[in-house]
Image 1 (cartoon, rainbow, N blue to C red):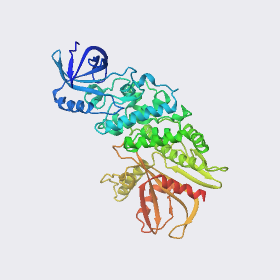
Image 2 (image 1 turned 90 degrees about the vertical axis):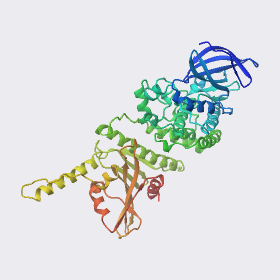
Image 3 (image 1 turned 60 degrees about the vertical axis):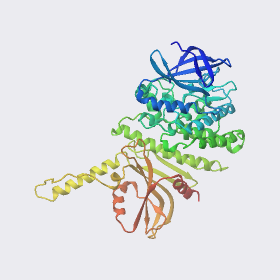
Image 4 (image 1 turned 45 degrees about the vertical axis):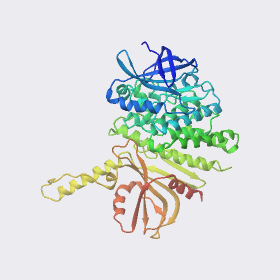
Length: 511
């Protein structure tokens, strides 16, 4: 395409020649006549006039950024070429190209952190006005001073929208797409933060966290696979950096950082800790975390239809492993403070493969146990109640006629509980009725029908409204719960499980 001279803001841009095709459209290289400096011209074809006003706003925003870590846009406007209308943006040309060409696992951690801070400062400026929507190393350029500058911000929502929302073609986008991108959620800062987490992993490790060869494999990886521990790739990378990247790439968007400022603060702390990496505590913590991650490498497996038994089992296993990982992290942090004896952790299948793995935590002669009912326990309980109601109908009339059907509506079904279990210590104390009981509570995994992931709750019974609490034995939990919930001597506590609950239980085997 023949591009005429463009005069804007007192400058003339000329001598255009085709350079490449980018995500926004065609890109041409030219010069600024009064300085003779190279520039690029980005052309954005206005295919749909209904998008023109929105696209104009995005272009106006793109040239308003004046941050050292955002690509410098000199001018923008509208132009007609070969009978077609285009928006154009004139930007500085960066000879060193994009970050993609410079990724290597041999880059010093200090250099990696400098690059990460460049990106974060640029994203802080961008998020003050727009969501980027298409973060990847190809959209991060390197200026003549070696600093990183973010480009192509905001416009990805409108460019080639049909192919982006359907097939997501192009290896430069799929590896950075958050789980919610695959389910069609609205563009959000959380999506950008997930993509940044993948990019930061790539900056440090020199490679992507997942190795996939198809769009389906990428979808499964983003939805159901844990981001690998980056310290297993770079031994000189601190635990803190690994924790930051893990939080940025959490499956649930609500579990990620909320703002770029939070991430900047976290990396500032990580940079300080990196300088103190010779400290004994940090060295031991790194070793402990490495062992922990190696012990919990198992990947989440594919699940397409949760109503199928095998996929439901995978979902349950993921949440059980998630819970055990929380307990392991707390135990590892405690063990770092011990010189001699350590808290021991053992996993096993006490019953059969129809039951999630149990966990035993022991210290000296005291134990804490976590175990669960079978995967089918709640469904089978509902069926049992239904059949029992039918049998009562049959016995209530001489002809054994069933007059009405029965829909099970127990507490568990009403509250979307899909798995129940128990966490209990052998520490004994008297309850409000004077009975000697073991301290503990019941676990419940709650998964709403429209949620991809579930959440852990605790259920406990307080005798006469007094502590301590005790758990109902697994063999009678489903039946006993209904009985206890109607007993005036008991108060039922049903609340979200948190780390303090787990720390409280561990405390009982340490005292």
